[in-house]
Length: 227
Image (cartoon, rainbow, N blue to C red; front, side, top):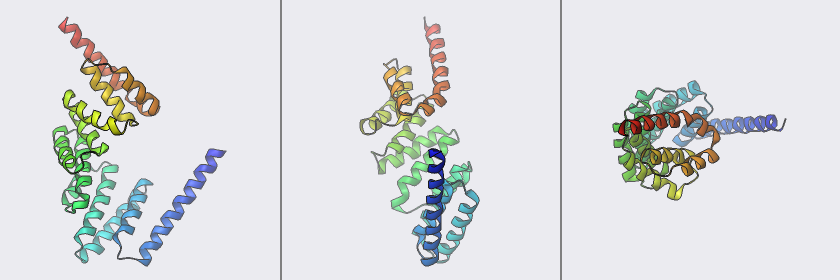
């Protein structure tokens, strides 16, 4: 009963926020942030059609005004929507259009994540490293570089990026888990990392267990050949 009430409460709060943002657009149609905030909220609510329509409409308004900064923000929001629904190539096109210095690191991060989604890990590393030059301490940037290097089998390099995250953000289950995989492959103590990941996010850990089993099998086969 309590959970149902909580969900109802959240739903009402969200509806209020949507209404408030629509009102803000009506009152200030020249403020790009109102369109971006509403489009991003609709994306999070999985209302993709309405979000896309809003972003496209807003892009038309700010293109007519030749407002480059506003267009960059809206392209970023629309790119995130396409990334979310799996239209990764369209997302990449939009992220590549962004010139605004304030958004560059975010755009490069999303480009790295987009190429990871496509399984193109070398490109993901390249864009991740470009983002890293702009924001070295960002855990999301370090994560995407670490994950791409892990996928490429560059375990020692991946370890560096995971360790950089864990110094400041030990509460990331994905980092702890992947650091555990790296340690396992490199023949280092790994069980503590995996135990941390399990404790932090059991759901994530259970989803990732198959990867762990596959790696263990591969390592056993390799060791068997070497003996």
